[in-house]
Image (tube, rainbow, N blue to C red):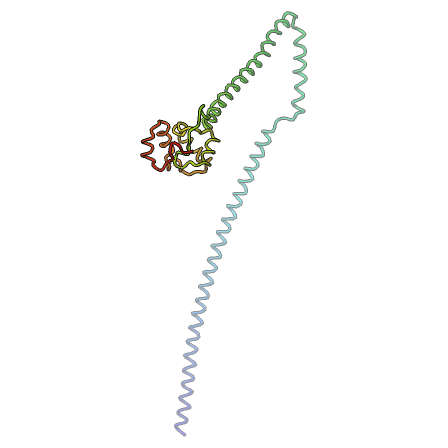
Length: 248
């Protein structure tokens, strides 16, 4: 019986001590939680105050910008109004006065003065006509000068075949019946013409024949120079696969 009593007393004492300790811990926890909540609230309040101040500054800057914009628009409107010419009604009021003075002036002039003014008027009328004729002549000469190089280019671009029998262009390596007909259509009929080709001529011929560097690769100009000079031996030595003199 005594043991049970002591055990019950020890249990009650443990419960009381646990309750006391738990109360202390709970109070400290609540105080810590309250301090943290208070610090968070203070921080949020400080952030709100800072943002409110920045918003007020932005509002002030916006008001200043709107005021400056309104002043600039007002100045622009004033300048536009100042640049507008006077109404035609105000300008027409001064016209009769000038007209009346212009009409009264001839009444004072004598017939001699009128006769002297006619040659001057004729000279003044002849001056624009002479200047116009000079301008037309200068334009015609400029057009002729521009047309002359163009005619030269056309003549150089499509060479005319020289008089006499055409050469057999198929002797050159790379020229067959089709290319020979195309070259004849372009006015190229002799070795001398091919030997005298320039870079511009080569580009033009290659564009027509749809080649890409083939003339230089197959050495058309070198072959044509030898054949135009009549050096058959050197031609046969350098180009043994080319056509013979009787090749048609």
